[in-house]
Amino acid sequence: METLLLDRLLLIGELFQRDMARAFDGTGLTTARVHLLWVLQHAGPSTQRDLARLCEVTPRNITGLVDGLEASGHVRRTPHPTDRRSVIVELTSTAADTMARMQGEHAELNDTLLAAVAPEDRAALERGIAAIATRLETLVVEAAGEEDQAAS
Image 1: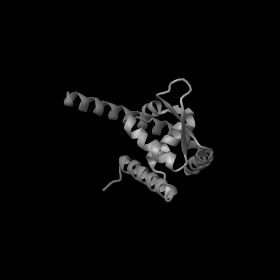
Image 2: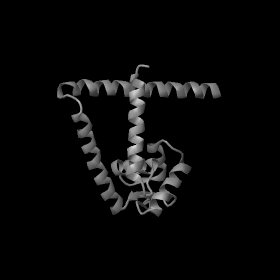
Image 3: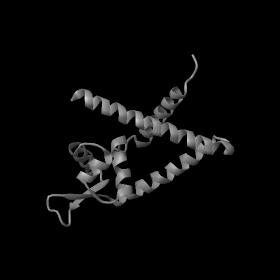
Image 4: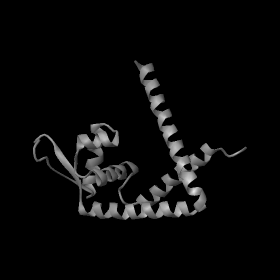
């Protein structure tokens, strides 16, 4: 049977998942927790409501993620300066160091993967991957809309 592009993309996704599981083994970090750390790294200190929106999860889900990251020493909650009902979630210095290291590893892996492609093919590869990602995102949004309409 011929290997389809989709099969290769699925394999790449699986390999990334395995690599992340290996990298996080023994750290108490999960994919969801690391995603939240990435969001905090880029957005800066944020309310849990903002984090839920940015991570596209429920406030209840964010509470659980923040609880776990706070227990592991990756984030801290501080009182909101103007809204006594809210708290601000921010990275600890340990987490900031971890995220800086991860960003370096991220850039290094990006360079390593691009090195597998001939320089003259890289621009076409990047355009193709961007087109595939855009198309898949559109299909996912459309499918979610159809599910919402069917449920109504």
